[in-house]
Amino acid sequence: VTLWLEVRASNVAAIALYESLGFNEATIRRNYYPTVDGREDAIIMALPISM
Image 1 (spheres, rainbow, N blue to C red):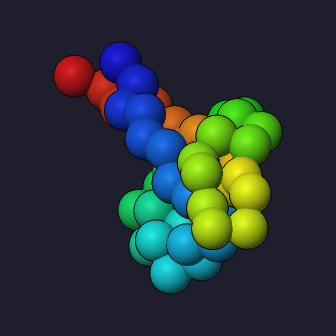
Image 2 (image 1 turned 120 degrees about the vertical axis):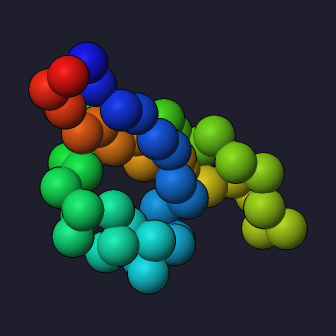
């Protein structure tokens, strides 16, 4: 089983938190989120867990 999440690339505090919990970057969705200046990437993170 794998837990998945996505986070804005600019949200460094959230990324640091997720990494501290064991999540790793799996892929990037380019230009996923709209911003006032254009678009922003989404980082997809994964955490394999055993049940």
